[in-house]
Length: 94
Image (tube, rainbow, N blue to C red; front, top):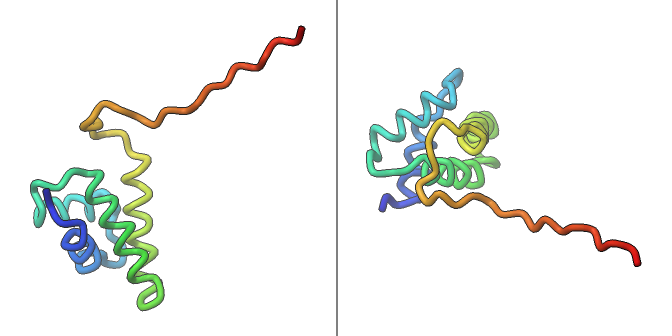
């Protein structure tokens, strides 16, 4: 299992002006081939948190990559489990 801190460092190093989120994720995958997309997204969020004060522009690029990874469903989920929402049915009036 790849180290989330190492992934965050790679994201920080690879985030350049004009890079597309998909390209950033692919570049990180080249350095960390065993990393899942979920791990890369988590590493990107960690990189954003650690870089936001030092380099706001770079933090914005990393944030864009992290968000696009969260909402991109092109890669199947590994566990098959999604978020479960508690669907409460309204109580019928008596």
